[in-house]
Image 1: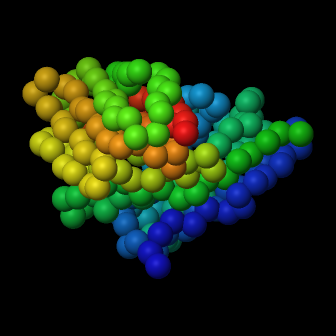
Image 2 (image 1 turned 90 degrees about the vertical axis):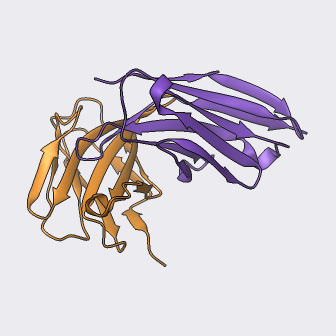
Length: 114
Length: 109
């Protein structure tokens, strides 16, 4: 089955730690995205990548970092500089270079700072 | 940036009732999607609808791009329809989505 896999589903982080969230897709999509969702809110864009070895900041990139070394993978690191990291993180992908830009999402990772 | 407003923010229906959810956006968009977020947080694609009307079972959607709004119709609602419905628009720059704040739907027996 084609899809987007995020891991882990739940993640607990201590103050001052960096943690990395995994996102893998086997849809052969070119573009990948990370969004953050806070309770009762819509999603906000953290980072996106349109092609391997290239990525751009979204609206709330401070305290986060990403890499895109493979087309299938777009990991997100939440650094200790992120002041309020507790949130639900969703990864998405689109096949934007073939006309249809419909976005598909993974199941998300819930990050809690303890 | 573009603003996306959804209404109503909350909706409670009895099973079997119909409803209309609205999404207004402040600027031209390349594409628009409707999602259903289930209680476990997963975003389920409902419609990819930059313009026109589409139907999928009990759900249908209409986007009038020239007037900058989209409507999601739910007919004969079921308890499994409960959750949050999001509208998201793509303004064409790298297909980044801007989300509304959602409509929280509760369907009761």
